[in-house]
Image (tube, rainbow, N blue to C red; front, top):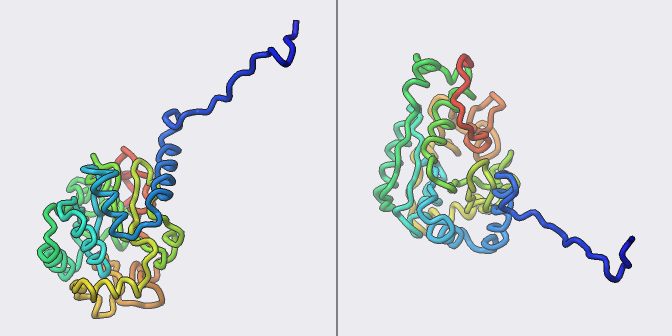
Length: 263
């Protein structure tokens, strides 16, 4: 017999808890909540929260020691100069970049800068003569930057970088926090513009990258960086190729190694 509506038991609404979501959904939800909680703070306060509270001991900075890097590194040093800083030494950097790296480390008092190099066996099979950048620049970046970074980030649950919305491309809509496969990516300078960067250099008496004064708005590996040839802060990177990113900001981090035979 059908129970009267007044006495019929109604099953409670079941809401799937976040712990039962897949990893990607949980990470995206965490990034969203972090944005809601800290999104109104200034960059230094965001870094303070990320480094000294939310991800204590589990966060690193990734820096190219390029033309704008001093601003982010200075903010990090103000918050905690012992924060690990990962520098991808691709073996193709300008000598000026390596010298600039060393001078910034000394000036800012950074105590844990990690110089990460490509795996020798990866280079042995794909870039024995050092000219892979001409034949397959994407694979060159994968071997010299993407894979070394993933190895270096092992054990970290979050990482800080210096991308900014004004740089355009896939950076145009980045938030302060974003889900990046298995980690949270922190973008404390996302809303900064060129004027704010210039002010920071002056107010904090930060040294400029020596190549910046020679017409290089952005500096990466020497073979793939030229002086500015158009508008935009990254116009000198991979000029004439259609390539705009080395790959570390769009890599699907995976346990697999490089696809052999692509070189």
